Picture 1 (cartoon, rainbow, N blue to C red):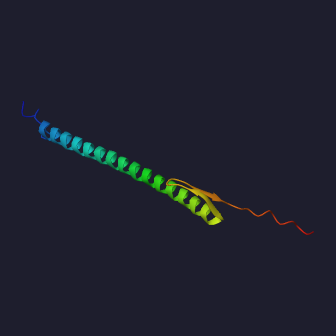
Picture 2 (cartoon, one colour):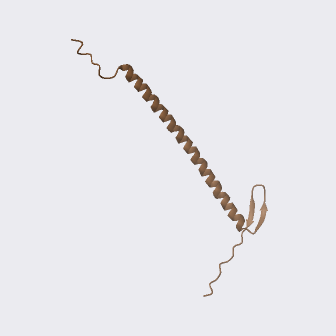
Length: 93
């Protein structure tokens, strides 16, 4: 009578616990990897913005130096340039 109640299909409690533990570890490792790469990306993105800003400032300074005709004053931290612009040519017609 009780022999017919015992079935061999399905998983045991130990097998289910092992699957739950392994699954939890995989999810934890995946989340840790995701957070690490997110922080790394933000760091790289921030350094890229700083490099672009520095490049823009240096390009503007180089353009100002190229277009200047004289240096009026210079100190350890600053330069003062003179930039002479020509008046626009008048149209003869």
